[in-house]
Amino acid sequence: MLEFELEMPLASFTLRAEGRVEPGITAVLGPSGAGKSTLLRCLAGLAHPVSGRIRLGERIVYSSNGRIFVPPERRGVGYVPQQYALFPKMTVFRNVEYGLRARRVPKVRREVKVEEILRRLGIGHLSRRLPAHLSGGEAQRVALARALVIDPDYVLLDEPLAALDSETRETVREFLRGVLRDAACPVLLVTHDVEDVRRLADRVMVIHEGRMIFYGGVEQWQRQGIPASTRRVE
View: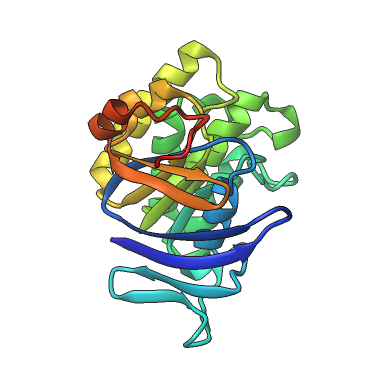
């Protein structure tokens, strides 16, 4: 389980979020600028909250009181930002392999894992290309592969399907549904697409102006009629 309680000042408001995310896929909804991406960056260790605590199982990765800040590479997190953040001078294969090399996974095992995930995402033929020669959808699938190949303890996906065409989006949804459920770890999926919620999510979290205003099951979210672009729950 991923547990967090954190505070982070932003330009027009302060993000104050707390929650307990169980294994499975939690869709994170809310209007643009609500603090969704900042929440993911804090959980990934790429932004430093001013106060709070982040705990994964029995392991505390951030605590303002305990002065604990575990860096991103030691958090066991698979993170896909909106901008993909691929290494421009590395091939697709090397980009995806990067986290495995950092964990000193043996070469033969690395090659098997990378080739398998590239195949499952339909980008095996791109393994020798550099990021500059990828389309937006191809780059997004490479970023997904890099995040998932390490078998992460938790996964943070910031609109991972946004740049894909409808046919590819459905293929990647099928892949994500299978691999993330098999991983049995907490997953936060930021999306504006209601179809992602219906097809992928176990639970829904809604953020508005830095506050979590809803957290619950998909059916409960549908009954309450809270849109992704969202209204405040009274």
